Length: 332
Image 1 (cartoon, one colour):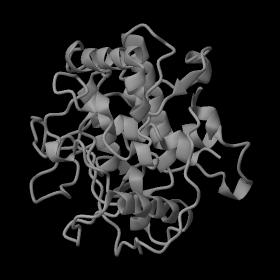
Image 2 (cartoon, one colour):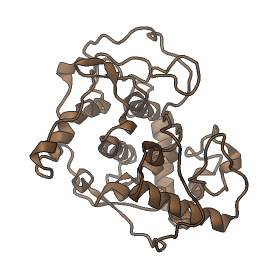
Image 3 (cartoon, one colour):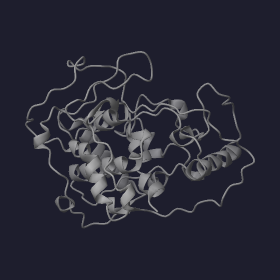
């Protein structure tokens, strides 16, 4: 699927294959994943599904509603005929509240502005030319590139505070795209009792690549730098297993005040389990365990939870940096 992105990722030195003695790294069951910003519900139209009308502006986030046909047609020449079936598509007129998997509260309204399906434009590659090769860089190395970090901060600041709340390029509107598709807000077309959860489907990789395709281009457009590329959080490299420095500055638009400050300088524990035995561990051993977990997840995962992991939220900019790894992990 490398054709989906006109960008590449810097090569990194990866440690040799780890042995498997220190960590069994098995998870017992599939866990739910939530991608909403909060569990609050501030939308007036919270108790009914949407009706539609022609909006004043085309919401480009709705290109993703055609993810079934778009993805299916894009890979026609790359897969065998028996597998060449279009994935499920959402019923765009039926977007409703997300589920409430995090607690017992009511779900959130992450739906896009109401839209008449007849007004949705089909995606065409020629409408989005990319004459410049974009290079995605490891986030933990960007302290050596202050000019790039400045551009990233400026683009995010404009996205968060410089756009009207109803603008589809607004940071929180973009977050709602992800929320709606991964928290059961859309019923499947012609199957009103079945809802889309993009993380628990084979569209996982392609959805996130399309999501970032537009997100990355929006950032570049806002700062008038079409060559801008998102960084990626290289958290399976020993030097990248901490939150990158650019997300720790409290005065930066990249900083999320809701993030637990105790985690800012901590090593990521890939084997962390809610309610499990997560006591202190030697940093060297933790890095070794993390490398083993990644190998098991990407090569030998036998149950969904080994791959999907625990609950995550799309609540701050570091999540996009995390998603920026998708081409690196899923491109052959």
